[in-house]
Image (cartoon, rainbow, N blue to C red; front, side, top):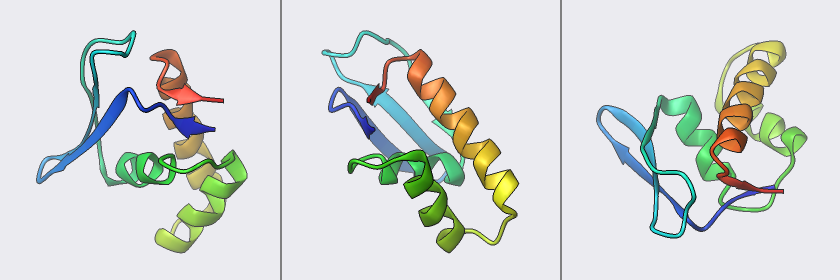
Length: 86
């Protein structure tokens, strides 16, 4: 899976935003925290849920079940808006 090229990641002091371009079927902004920002950055390259988990374990000092939950929630929302190529 990979983030579609019709979405741009924007980071600011307030957090991370995912912005659709004109070619996206979704219109609006997705706002998230640093965890979402990390997931989005990892999705710039082809990866799997397990690949995301392994990278997140290196980045964050959190229990694996918490990371799995966060990744699952993020991917679910990104799928709803059509932001992921699978």
